[in-house]
Image (cartoon, rainbow, N blue to C red):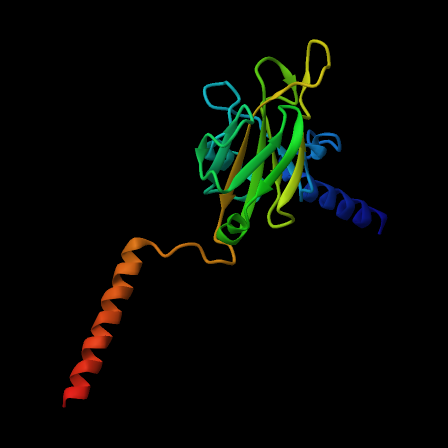
Amino acid sequence: MKKLFLAALAASIVGFSGGANAATCTAAVALGVTPNQGCHVGTTGVGGSGNDSASILDGETLFGETNWTQIAKDNDLNGTDSGDAAALTVTGSQISGTLDIADFVFSTYAKVAVVLKSGGGNATPDFWVAYDVADINSVYSYTSIFLNNNNSNQKNLSHISLYGTGVGPGGGTIPLPAAGWLLVAGLGGLVAVGRKKKS
């Protein structure tokens, strides 16, 4: 009985902390974006630089998911530089502040993640950390959880990225080819009704 209890406890801890990276996603690291449903310390980066990307998140099966899409990215935390500027608003400094995530993001995607990326130089934890924020809130607090390996000072963030995967409760958008077939079917129905009225 005691073994079963310990196994269940261990499983719940791993599940909350993001699976394989449970050991590195400490309580202090989990405070990077709050509130959150779990965090994941990245282990890979583009060209060895440690930058995050949708393909990197897919490669690490972030929060058990693939097919991640970058929705928005704010370099230097001075305004959204790429993606949908309406999706993410960052207010604060390169150390701490707030994130406002638009409601349409949570209706479009089943799972949403915020990624904090450390500034240049060696830091602990390395590279980037992702936070599962799927439909908890619209405004989140963020703080740099990266420490300089040379002097243990808090490091500036390089950027904040917003990602999504899966289809949310809003159902996403109808792909253009499907919309075209729906239009053709609708027009065909109108023609059939028009002919029926004439006879």
